[in-house]
Length: 211
Image 1 (cartoon, rainbow, N blue to C red):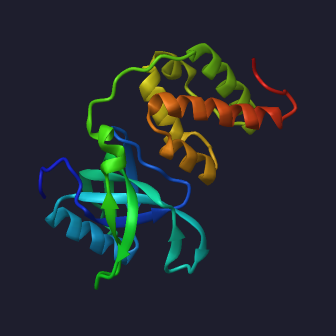
Image 2 (cartoon, one colour):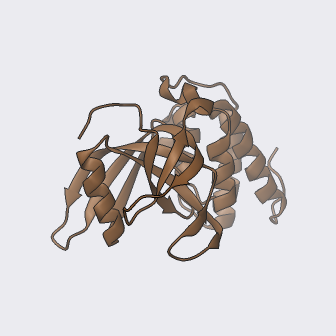
């Protein structure tokens, strides 16, 4: 597998509902469908990158409609299980715009990807400024409403940039909200979007908005 860090223009796609991949973050996947096992085999022989892209309403079960923007990741861990599944981990490299879907003989889908709108994704992430205490209060109120447990000690210790990006991927946001977070210009903008989403959710709950 190539060690190149820049993902290819012709990008194999792994469509998933409610899942995004942000630059610098890691995404474990349990791969068991034959077409995606085939894709992983091909990817490991090639540049080593996969595009994670959300499913939208429409299309067919075999070929659902896809979001216009996804996240490309590099396969950094591969393990084959005794029952034929692949356990892989992707590390996010860059978001991309899906310019067009390509006609290929492969059982999986391939897109022409444009990374130019997200050129800064390839640069090292820098720490952002923000009101961590306010974000944590909003998260605690929302998680309590949703009956979701969290390791608040780890939340308190994580750099704000890491916290925002990881929460965007793993917190129980809906697919549309997750796409909104993915498409934010950068992590600072993502923090603003996250606070807006949390405020919307809390305003609709019994406890009202968090100040």
